[in-house]
Image (cartoon, rainbow, N blue to C red; front, side, top):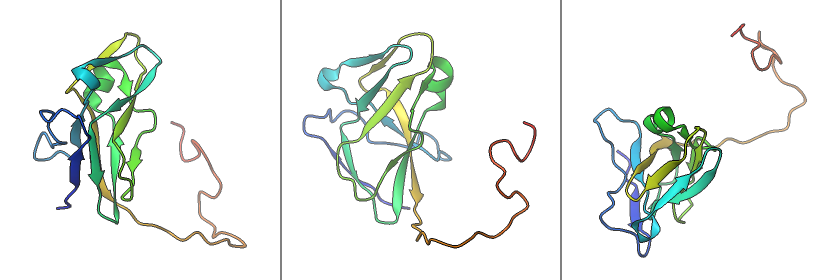
Length: 151
């Protein structure tokens, strides 16, 4: 198991739980909104906002945290994360915020303590990119979007 060190931002609400896995088989740990003055953020249809979590993390080298939407918010309210998956790099030590977007048709209120996203810890492999004179052939070749089937 990988250990992620977490600290709270100055003034963050200590009653907001740290990210946690809600079931034993969960791949993502739910992270919650930590809003100033324990308030709320209203997302009108088509708008987005950076929702603070009140946390900072220390991710071990060789890992990242992917920030992903919660399926219930997406299905029930049209809430998504426009840069999905967002990446938190192992050398970032700043405050964690979640960019949330309302793709639905009704305004949605995000309140202090709401579960707003999932964090997935994943290994990272860095590559070297080498300029080449050509690339090997494959059956697909240069076929792009939709080239492998009709749907």
